[in-house]
Image (tube, rainbow over all chains, first blue to last red; front, top):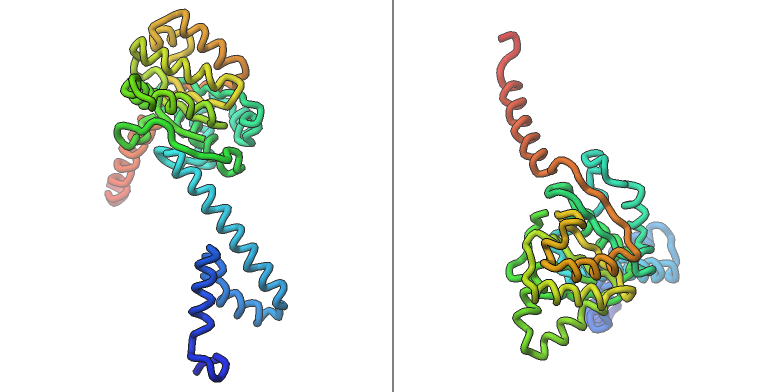
Length: 157
Length: 132
């Protein structure tokens, strides 16, 4: 059972579409168009809204990949977000200031942050969490790694 | 945006000293909007190392944000950079527009391992039938 138009070899439009979407670098279109079409048909969504949804999915996915790439290229030793930081375990830390910094406005003002304290209090976690927050805000347009580590650095602090 | 430990670029900069790479390496961090320099002060720097790292901070001053994590408090940085003059100049630039996060407390690693031990013990106790 096939819903291809008569006279067309089965699957030809799909193959061509897959090729074109790949060439246009629209992987999410390729992955989602069929499933979303069925969904839209069931929900009675018109072709314009179908295309819009598909484009939105592509954009969301692209944004996610960009953030991921930034983090990877910055050679972060581990991806640690501020959400996983246990502020209750370190009451001396100014949580309000950390959350304010997470908004990354200091990056635009070119200000610095120094985390100082004894070993094992999560300084690296906070520093990476702030870096991650800035990446997610899309602040650094350009990401490169600087200074190749001798060994892949493991999070030791 | 970049991440590095304090020791890694110093090694690299020293190795690149007689090379064109030095110039490139030194120019590169100046372009970052945000640079994380981790673990400053774990290892004392050589004079060359300290000067090179100072150069990095100096170039970044008012050009981009830097996040530094440091084990020793500021008054012990002289020991890290092995020069009072250099440390003074560096702190002056770094702390001009700065947010300081004081993070002194119990080590979470220590706490974690204690909790694990305690957890294992509780599990053992739970295995023993009550009333004994």
